[in-house]
Amino acid sequence: MDNSTTNRATRGLRLRWLSRLGLALLIALLTGCALLPGDVVRPESAAITDVADTPLAQVAAAATPADRLHLSGVRLLPDAQDAFALRLALMRAARKSIDVQYYVIAHDTSGAQFVDELRRAAARGVRVRLLVDDLHAAESDATLLRLAALPGAEVRSFNPLPVRRGGWATRLLLSLHDFERVNRRMHNKLLVADNAFAVTGGRNIADEYFMRGAAANFIDMDILASGPVVRELSDLFDRFWNSEQAYPIGSLAAPAGTAPSTVDAAAEPLPAAFDDSDGVLARLADGRLALRFAPVQLYADVPAKAAPAGASPRPATAMDSAMGLFGSARHEVQLVSPYFVPGQRGMAKIREATAAGVKLTVMTNSLASTDEPMAYWGYARYRGEMLSLGVTLIELNPASPSSRGLGGGGSLGSSVGRLHAKVALVDRRWVLIGSMNMDGRSSRTNTELALVVDSRELAADLAALLHDREGDDHYRLRLSTDRAASIADADDTSAAEPRVEWVSAPGRPLRVHRSEPHVGWLSRVRLGFVSLFVPEDLL
Image 1 (cartoon, rainbow, N blue to C red):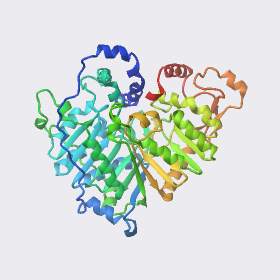
Image 2: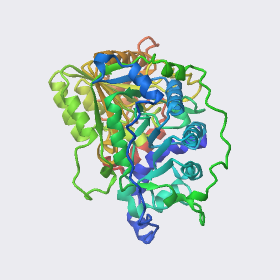
Image 3: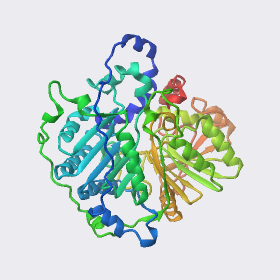
Image 4: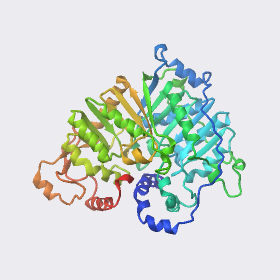
């Protein structure tokens, strides 16, 4: 794995447990550390709504039947390459505004292309607002400052760490005196072009989310939307943009003695223009987008969720809404989440659902495929009980992942596949897709958003994708019926009685693993030991 990918893949893990080790000592040592700037000027702005004359609004109108104007248009984006090309195409076609909100915009090829397209848009007079979570953003300060220096472009950093010097680990350690705040991140992913089309889902902007990573790639899912829900997403963006947690990048990262306005926006020439070789722009221009039209609900957290606990009364969260949706199921719930830590609250819901005869299927990462081993260990605490309740558990096999089904698009080649999609299918009618993992961090700590689409047609689209993925590179878990084997395999410290087995996918040679596949016993023991010291509320 290249260095940038490795760093991003392990930072969440470090944030979950490193910060609590020796915290009391560090607080004492770091008293008097840097604070965020005061008296920050945050000019308020709102989404541009006068967009009917823009090409994108005209495309959206042309694609919407007259009897569907009250509904939102939606389209799943499982193909990684198409998902990236569509983002670039929307930015290229925008004429009035582009609003962008991401947890990660990496300092790599995909990140550079993405930001350069924003620079091109700003240079031709489009208003650009970019809001990025600060945790991974410091290495891109120079790039973000160049964008912010363009007329009509603004960049803000959400919930910044008070220290920007040094590497990621240094910044975190020097910010631990403010841990309760910096532990809360903006996990949202959103792009809105001319208030006509929006893209949201699980993908950040980095090579590994678009099948460009050399060593590892994420299997993910986004959704394209038009119609009424786009205005709701724009309103949500405005709430984050104008919140007290959003800091103009110039107030944080301006070079010493250099005002943001003096940064040379043309210091780096733009690369060659985006090559629309796959016809995405043409399909947008002539209104041939194949959209499903349906009622769409927005589940979203408010910016204040990123404030320290106790700072204000906690409103209902996106996870609360999602749990309500799952609780309404009468027949079946299929969940896909890279990090699945149900906790006691989730287990209570699972018991209720299975007792009512609801079939529950969970697809998640295996220990070998996950980039968050501690989150996997949190899930492992509940595996046995879930299986005993009749829950179907499916884990990704990273040994030979294909590009079929969920999150396909381009061959993974020799790279490791990691599940990153956050989707759910309820009663083959409701589709949930967004940024929200089924774990404690998404529930209590990070801000999240998700769209819920009431459409049997879109549900059928997603079911077909899930079927393709489930029938390919995965393990299906089961409880062992072999008592002797259970005793013989007692070196696996992660499993509780009754023991769990991993069975190869149908259509492949039958193979049964009695401990986590593709992970050595020493790694399992080490991670199992470390997990004893990691509170579940940090997973």
